[in-house]
Image 1 (cartoon, helix red, strand yellow):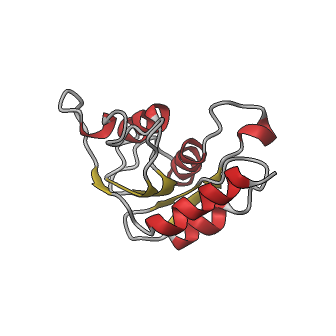
Image 2 (cartoon, rainbow, N blue to C red; image 1 turned 180 degrees about the vertical axis):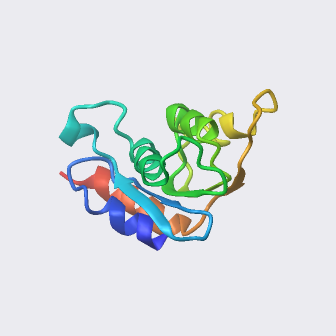
Image 3 (spheres, rainbow, N blue to C red; image 1 turned 60 degrees about the vertical axis):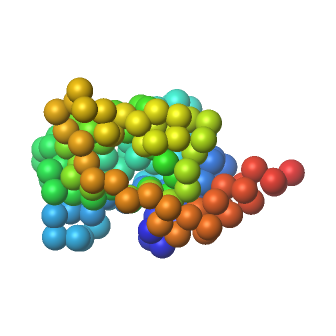
Length: 140
C-alpha cells in the first residue's frame, strides 16, 4: 500500500488514487495513478490503467493469481473491470461512501451472480489513504 500511496502523489492534478498490480510471485507488474485530467479520459482511473498495463506485461487479459492494491475503494467501473480481469485479490485503503462498489454503496466484487469473486482486504493503511484524499480536497 505504501507503493500505491507514493504513486498517487505523483499525479498532482487529479484525485490522488494510486494502484499497483502484483503478479503471482508478488513482483510489481504495473502501477498507475488517476490520469483523467491529463488524458481528458473519464475512464482513466488508476485501477483501469494499472490493469491494462499488467495485462500488457503478461500478454493476457486474465490476471489470475494477481493482486490489485489501490488507495481508494474502487468504483463500479473499476470493480467490474477487476472481476472481468479475474484479479484474485483486491487490497484497498480508504472507503468511498459516495461511489464505492466493494461494500460502501454497492458490492460488485461479492455479487454471487458473478462467476468470479476476488478475496478482499479493506482498510489497509486507511488513515494515510484518507489523509491523502482529505488534503487534496482541502486545497485552495
